[in-house]
Every structure is written in structure tokens, then in C-alpha cells.
Image (tube, rainbow, N blue to C red):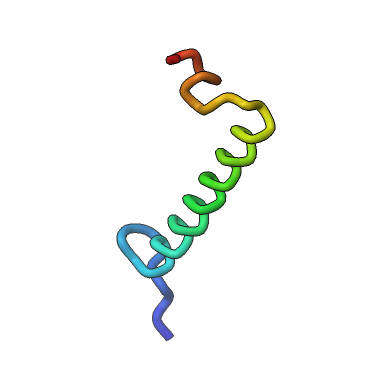
Length: 46
């Protein structure tokens, strides 16, 4: 049985990239709702 490649543009990498992107977006929205400031305000750009 051939071992699945875990780096590069593979199905495995793209699935995890999507999952982590959704997690980051959700955390960003929650932080914005809790603090009342957007990400640009939090890092001092606005």
C-alpha cells in the first residue's frame, strides 16, 4: 500500500487548510463580537 503524501497541493492538505481557515474566521468573528473592535482596530491600523 502506497503511503499518502502529506505536503503540497494534495486532498489531505486542502481539507486541513479549509478546516483551519473556517476555524480562524470563526474565532475572528467571536473576538470582534466580544471586544467590539474589528481586527484593524485591535492591531492599531484604524
